[in-house]
Length: 64
Image 1 (tube, rainbow, N blue to C red):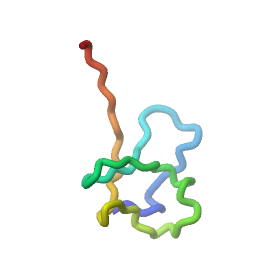
Image 2: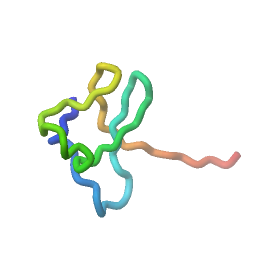
Image 3: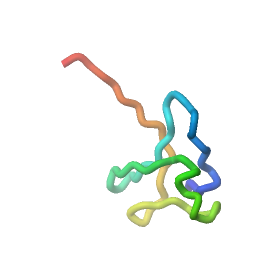
């Protein structure tokens, strides 16, 4: 379970950034703590009635 307090501020960071991912519908959400300033720090972040997963998305380019 990911809570708001588990997220980090991502302003000014480089490289791969984490995202919140719903395993049910495949939606992706910001994992920047600053985007949830209006929420309690103990709020569990969820989608489709299930907790979101904190993941790092990797994109791979392959020759066609």
